[in-house]
Amino acid sequence: MRENERAGFARLAFEMCAKHLDIHLHAITVKKENVAAHIRNDENKLYNYMIRLSLLECMASQDQVTFIPDPRSIKVESGNSLHDYLQTELWFPRQAKTVLVTTPLDSKSCRGIQFADMLAGLIQQRFEDKCFDHMRTCVRYLRMKRLFFG
Image (cartoon, rainbow, N blue to C red):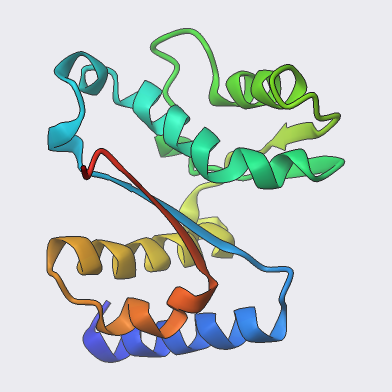
């Protein structure tokens, strides 16, 4: 996005969250160079772990969750799907009764994924370009976790 588009998106995200307090923005960032090499060899496991840390608590408080990942982010090299991993984590360690419905959609046909991609762009700009300008606008509603920064 161009700078004016980033600013407009951040403003609209803030306004949406201020108007609808049941909307929560979640983000997780990882400093990959601080992650052990044997873990980086399978990016899918790190991705799954990050999803669990970011969303499981919110998922566990619901009766049913529709999880809509971008299909490009789903890899099945290990033979275990993200859906099964999350459902198992919900039912056993969390003892939640949440039913997880996973419906992969391509970002071009899902406004929610497009929104997440744009928010990720603001966060990426913050960490990679050291530019906090646009993220500052909606940070009040952003629940951010940082991994392997220490």
